[in-house]
Length: 156
Ligand code: 4NP
Picture 1 (tube, helix red, strand yellow):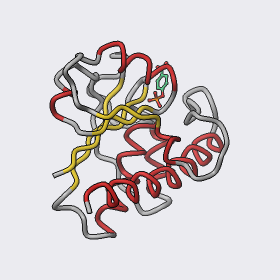
Picture 2: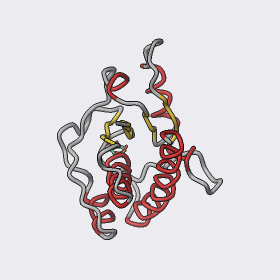
Picture 3: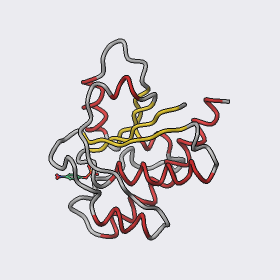
């Protein structure tokens, strides 16, 4: 079993969308028995909330249902997950600061898996509009393909 955790700031916009897109691809490739995912936020403002309606809508427009409830990233996540995937550099720094010295978890930026060379970050859409969420969807869709291909290679 490979366990993947997606992390952003609030756990209501980017990381639940990343998780939904990624699991959609996992099921399409019939890898559901081998990959588990979750998402979390480095901030605790939105704990317990469903994803932002704009993420839910852009997901639904692409046939994906988001059911996650926001939770805070915590140190036990380093034991529970093989891969911890940060949406931006601020999230990455936060995770790396918390990382126990003996943890084997692999911590990466989401866009390390984006084949289109551009920015290194999934931009925070919270103060944006519908177009910003569509842009985030497109970036996550590409990056999830890259991540899944990478995991498939790593496990074969
Ligand atoms: P996320 O977006 O990190 O992609 O979930 C945000 C959600 C909430 C806030 C910032 C970013 N906030 O400031 O409340």
